[in-house]
Length: 477
Image (cartoon, rainbow, N blue to C red; front, side):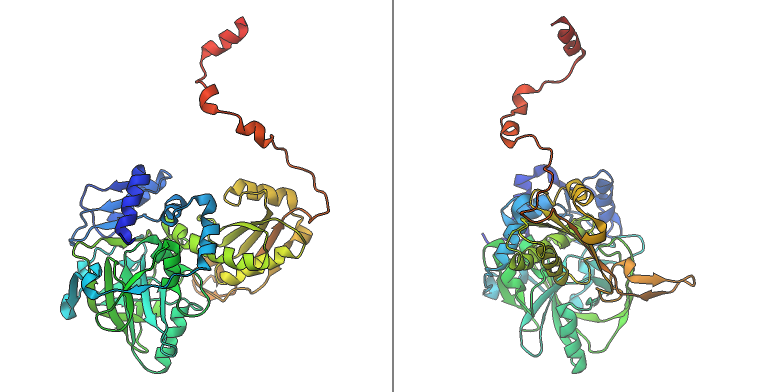
């Protein structure tokens, strides 16, 4: 069976049965869905949550499905230790999508047109206290470049502004923003399709940083190791995934704006809001028993889902300039940082690796940390230990002023004034070289127990619970 949201949910339930829960209670779409996820978050847990009953909608909802690296690694058929390397390698071997007949496309089971195509049928959550309203957070937008004809896919935020209106914010520098500007310059409405619910490989493919327009469906195919099945949209020639749960079709009217935001973005703050383009909804297609897929915005799932595609893209670009690359981590709790480990051969590699990473994510990365191949980049105490023992600040820290575009999602990219106003400012990037000197220089060795001795220890065979009797037995002996 081709992979989709349902096959992945079943895979999670089989591999990690304790990490997917059914919420056996009707919940409100406003804060009801996210409140359950937040309660688990307070306990340091991030299970996938399935809501069969959401008030005022016949559709069930799922949230937090992508909230752990273990589950994302499962979607790639690998482990957390290997997922970044595998992601980067698969990016080099794209798999072309295939067009299928409309009659075989589950997303065409139900077709709602005109007045029937109302967003009221969807259980769109309001996520956080200061959000302007309900938001689609796990939906990706399909559009077509008006010059080249290339279809492009990207994940953006969409505010429900009315039964037939969705806001959209294209971040500056993203391909969707450039394509939209072309339509506006020509005074033309822009056809779009919003896709909700598919396998994580397809969602991550929509997030990956790729050169030029398009390539997202091809990358999704490489991540899933099978072609993405596509079908033509109802009202345009846009290609949409045949095995998606829901597709919303419409147009962005040229040079029209509506107030959008505020909305809690992945840095965990409210920053950008104001007049933004919007979509006039004209058609909704869906599976007969569609599942509404949502991402817990401003919380761990938002960070994890966005981090792995960036790690894979960073891995691919750094590997091109530093062949000794070992691993990359964009920490889920601070997606503005990037840790890179590599087998060092000369002193120029640190800057090459750092700039390759910064150019992959120029508007978000603030700190790049370079470490040796004996440091596990997914073990943050080890990374901090390397900074403490291998970095000399006066020569190993590089500041790059005015690196990013002004403003954006990070609240640190603004200057704040006593009258309550703010002004966008470019951010400085920092590179920390926490590597040992390159060979043949000698550096003091680490304190480590020999690997063979550790490997011979079988804890299950030798460890027993400690009791007071153990002290008595020791004295008697």
